[in-house]
Amino acid sequence: MTLPWRVVWITGASTGIGAEVARQLAAQGITVAISARSADKLAVAASGHGNLKPYPLDVTDAEAVTATFSAIERDLGPVDLVLAAAGTYAPVSLEDFSPRPFRIMYETNVLGVVNVLSAVLPALRRRRKGHVAWIASVAGYRGLPKAAAYGPTKAALINLAESLKPELDGDGVTVSIINPGFVKTPLTAQNDFEMPFLMEVDEAARRTIAGLAAGKFEVAYPGRFVAILKFARLLPYRIYFALIRSAVLKR
Ligand SMILES: NC(=O)c1ccc[n+]([C@@H]2O[C@H](COP(=O)([O-])OP(=O)(O)OC[C@H]3O[C@@H](n4cnc5c(N)ncnc54)[C@H](OP(=O)(O)O)[C@@H]3O)[C@@H](O)[C@H]2O)c1
Figure 1 (cartoon, rainbow, N blue to C red):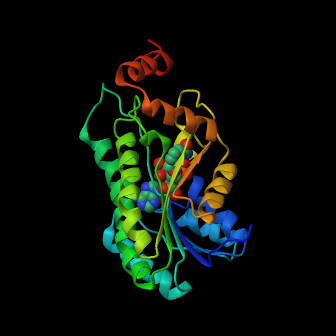
Figure 2: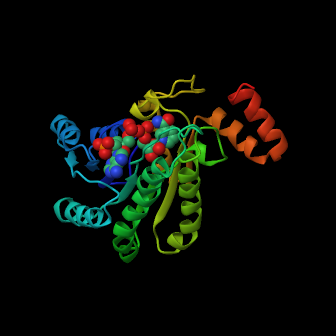
């Protein structure tokens, strides 16, 4: 597959999906600026491949995000694709319900993406060229148990993409939303339940890259899990909650 990008910027690229997409793109000769908070992990990744360029960053710091994007364009040239993959997950239980996990997940997952968009969109719109993509989740399709904080952040990211796409299309900027099911990464390693349709991270990265290269608006995988959850989105509440009670809560 010939990929249409020369320079790519990926946030959340120290581990998991972001790191693997970066590795696969670098292996294809693309220069990839990689960001995350862990400078040590980024340095190790970059020492393994000359096309990986580390730019440590906390995406919740809006000024740092803008400064990092300027540094990347100064060092590497115009960025063709921005993939905002930085995200965090923690289950929410009713026993220790508090605003803290909500604040962390909303700031990282939602405002982290907004900070990236706010930094890159002026340049991309001016050039009338470029592709912005961010990772939401199939957990954003409908409310799920334990995902009271994570799910709404991902629903917000899907809605954000739907909201921005029509106008950005007119500006020559492509928008994509990535909705993975369960992927084997440090983020899901904490899950104490059997994850249906669990996908290896290299496969998730391959599908992400293929979908983005094809210019798709939604890149969602694995197909059967996505189809089941999209169907569940159409169910009336009475049936949906009965299914959740019996299939997920087992009561
Ligand atoms: N794995 C799944 O099953 C799955 C399914 C659907 C959606 N997703 C989404 O896919 C994305 C990647 O997840 P993953 O599974 O690959 O998880 P992961 O391995 O935990 O990777 C998360 C990445 O985000 C970075 N990060 C977290 N907070 C950050 C911050 N404040 N500033 C900058 N970077 C930050 C982490 O690096 P540092 O800790 O070094 O900052 C890491 O590089 C997330 O948005 C996640 O919600 C994952």
